Length: 248
Ligand SMILES: NC(=O)c1ccc[n+]([C@@H]2O[C@H](COP(=O)([O-])OP(=O)(O)OC[C@H]3O[C@@H](n4cnc5c(N)ncnc54)[C@H](O)[C@@H]3O)[C@@H](O)[C@H]2O)c1
Image (cartoon, rainbow, N blue to C red; front, side, top):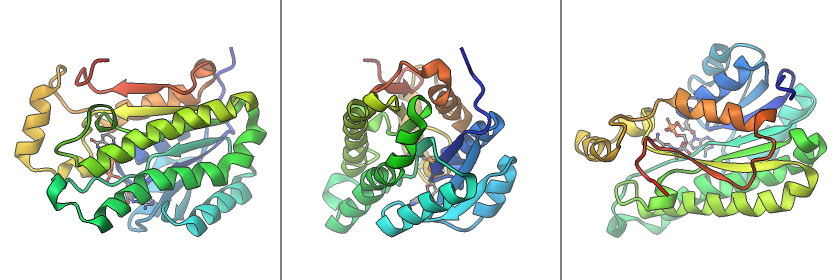
């Protein structure tokens, strides 16, 4: 079985830090050429340089159709194609249900769910051209499976929506050989969780059978597996990486 990923081209959203940066590094380490998309320009170029290889930094907001199309076009123009899309960008405002405003609800859904839809739609022609090497990986969350009281109902709803989007696209793109899967990480040590109170973190940690948060690399390794030829028969799946927090 082939497992040479070198020369393939990937676009990773929310790539400037945290899990997206770890994914970009993991893919670049396999010889994949990576376009790193982030709305926050601060440190994005440095992040791209840190992953090595020929990573391309593109500032874009995944919730804006024009930005998404520009990011995909720039990637294809720069590298000559696009075979792998990792929809990782996401926000988690940690609001209790009663205090979620309509604007906050719309913003969470626009970035976490609509952003993935826009990226999939813009990347679709290129992924289809890649055939059996085409891959989409969507970053859901254990909150999309279990619900999320502390992470917020809007966050949990957006991540549950991503699981539905992934299954729909897996069915649609199977005829082209493109696989579409979802990851559902548990609590992972990044800037996103660094913003949580110690009480929230302790409450979550106490419930994790492995007794610790995930590290970004542990999520990135699963992305590297899913985009490899070893995962050629996995599509429409939601893969749990949660230290035993949620057992189906
Ligand atoms: N950290 C966790 O515990 C955890 C658990 C499960 C799932 N996730 C998911 O993993 C993904 C990455 O999380 P993280 O912990 O690395 O978060 P993070 O906040 O550390 O990084 C997220 C990155 O996404 C970028 N981003 C935000 N809005 C964007 C937009 N509109 N367009 C483009 N980029 C945007 C940010 O600038 C940031 O660089 C998210 O989708 C998150 O929901 C995280």
